[in-house]
Image (cartoon, rainbow, N blue to C red; front, top):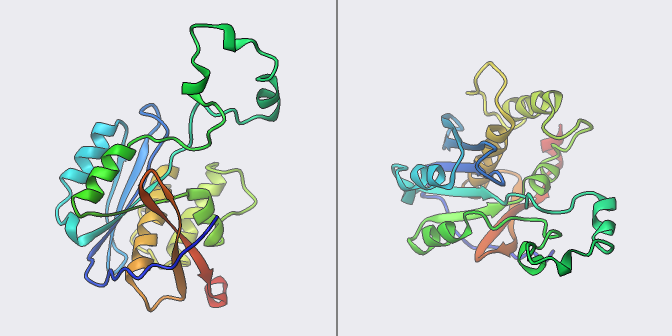
Amino acid sequence: MNTKATSNNFSNKHYFVGLSLASGASIDSGAAVLDRNLNVIRLDKLFTMEDVKFFINNFTGKQDAIFNISIPENPTMLNAKWKLHSREYQLIQSSKLIDVNKLDWTHRFSTRGSEFFRECKSNGIDIFRFEIGELKSSFGLSGMYKDRSPVDCKAFQSALKYKFNIYDLPANMIPAAQLEAILGAYLGYVMYNTSLQYTYKIKAEYQGIDVIGIDFLHEQNFL
């Protein structure tokens, strides 16, 4: 993946919004808002794209915020090796009920919400995308536990609190989608605060919007 430096200056931003977008309305999406002091201003659950649109369109001070939206996985992707190989032997091309070229079962990411996010960008909102797996790995949060399992979420929440100084978290366990949204919001804080020992970069472009990631992590942040 090619990377390029960005010269954007976000020193005037006051809010950092993360949104962990699910692949469909049947799974909850998480939304989180942090301020400059890493206080948790808002945590929310969203389901449909109408919920997402309402959340962003009615966000007070969205011109003073950075929005980081995760790229959801494609729910129709063939994610098992035997399924991928079996495609070669299934005579689905002869069926009029299945449009193979349209479904594209091997595409990793979903385009859900991309048109609306491009519209937000054209309206002057600082909106970016991120890939949650790559971001967790860059921050050193990819542990030995099964992704989104209770023990993984517990370790994730503890890291957000003690490693990234986001102390204003509820005492109870936070859902995985909201934890991922908080990490996306913290990425916005990294983009704003140039005094941190992090370097963020534009890793790629997806559906017309820059994908942001962490390019460098100083050794002291692992201590």
